[in-house]
Length: 350
Ligand code: CIZ
Ligand code: SF4
Image 1 (spheres, protein in one colour):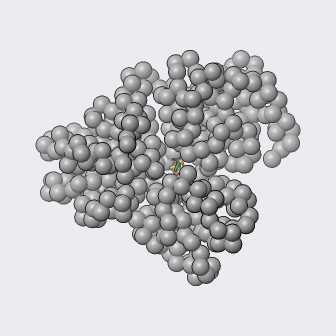
Image 2 (image 1 turned 180 degrees about the vertical axis):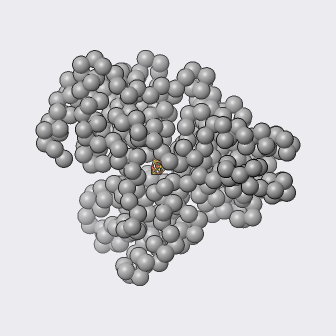
Image 3 (image 1 turned 30 degrees about the vertical axis):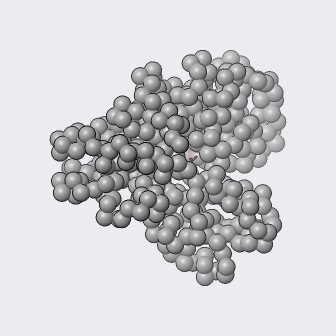
């Protein structure tokens, strides 16, 4: 990265000292990650932000829903900043508040809402988390989805799982022993979700029709190809991948699980990893004694994660130095309250 910009970022960070805390998501570019005070997945970063009440400014190098979660979990006077406001998440955008309300009304009209517990993945907007809080539901991450679903099924006969159909299906079928027939997909662009009343009545998991535009691109052929190219390879994928990909893989797990698996893998072992490319490249550099490659070379970076680059970070930091708060992410009070209810239910899971 540009040495001039590196120097400017370093200076601005030094000038802000303890007033500043920089969070870096694992999928961020190296040029940005080098300035992170802590790295992690979305959940770990939100908790890290909450554990820094003395920091006046939290610069979140990640995407919009993550900055919202940090604002929800930090105190009122802390300011959360997203260096580029165009860093959204296509998965989170696949479930808008109006669409989810419409789905809920349809469930009410069908007399089913009372037995449905809404559970949303962390990768969703603050108003979807608040919707879950208001309607007796919870948030989950990819590492506690199973526990969150167990919790939900103790309270209702059905779950509405938002917005990632793959995480919902993979957890229900591979970890909880449900069948594919127990799952239906709610398509927000079709009347009644594209489902018949009988299908809704019978379903246990109502999966929102959302997916990650990175993880959703790995295919069963990606796995077959890498196995034919690399004999003895271990295939390790994230549960946001399609069901058929996860079925063919050797291991499946959250970002933190992927990192730990590679950390403890024997030297000389070989791995094809199905997750975001910035992270896979960094892991290959971090563990040079293992053969770590990307599951499918036709899949690329998360384009919105990559919007946060060094020029944007420098701009955000230098603005703070001169007393200008740019790109602050704020969640209104009512949404914060109900989103926190849903987040707290997750934090209380056994
Ligand atoms: O940080 C996370 O939890 C993940 C898996 C992020 C993402 O964007 O998929
Ligand atoms: Fe969203 Fe997927 Fe990008 Fe994560 S990797 S921010 S889920 S589009």
